[in-house]
Length: 470
Image (cartoon, rainbow, N blue to C red):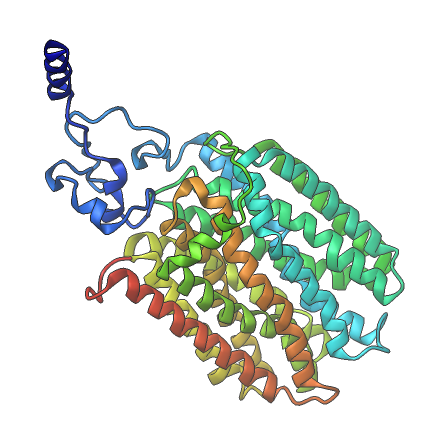
């Protein structure tokens, strides 16, 4: 017995010391790839940590695994094909959502003119809400099965919903087809694209997200012009069908190019998996701040065209306000993404949100002529475009990339509540009159509150190092 014990002790003593965990990456990079407690990280020998910026591996480290930042391609043909596929996904999903202001104005003056602006706004609000509310469920499906089946189902529902909208005549028809069916499909397109891209890029993640998100801006330029120009020529039904066929063609490309670098990781459904991220102060504050931002973000997009008509702008010029806004957001989605990778994603996120909130209160609120309204549309498009591209990059930065689907879903499900409430509140504040003052003040104030909360979120990450890149 003694000899056996001695043998076991010798085996124990000869066991090689465990190499430092790659979880130490958290303390050296902007991305929280392997979340651990501070106490756990302090046990790692700092001299053996992985230096991400220099690319030097720790001594005697095993080959990098798929979660190691060294294994992220950050480029190459396949990675950029995924970006292109994501661009198509954003064009047909968020790009379509970006043109909902056109339908608010069209329904209010033609098909549904017997309803109040607040009642009509429930169609477009429900469209935005359904786009995001399924996030936790779709995120879990993505983590378990990958993007393929989600994209196929989403493609069918999005196109089918728009085809059904083309034959709608009653208010409840539009609610079911345009407000529920189509955006559920768009949601099943949006989330796989966003989550898949996170697995291909690390150092240039914000730039890649910016390029992908610019697809929604381009869609937001093309779709409003297409809808408003074709309706007088071929009528509302065929206009919706033309849009649906364009979307179908782009979705064929998306289904062929979109894939995740990591294999699916099936796990049982657990409700707390969606709640657990909210126990992290940074994640909870980011979601709360983004909630208030979203509460005010879509109001200018949805009502700026009506405001232009109310102050005497010609119908032809007013119809270009939303395309101008979305065209400017192309630069807002790409340039801040590049700057975010260089100077810190949360740093850029906070700055652009304060910028957008100030624009609403200082430029849109006093605008009573064509020129300032056009300038506002362009600058606001740039600011809000940055928020759309930086938000998922910041979410990935403070998340375990293996749970990116669930965590993106949790964040955007919270935002969906703001998207659902924002437009009806704005419509109620507008009423039947032509005074936009209450709506504008509400939008600017809640946007400012959201920007302030995101600033506090940044503070939890940098602590006493105010000028830190984060």
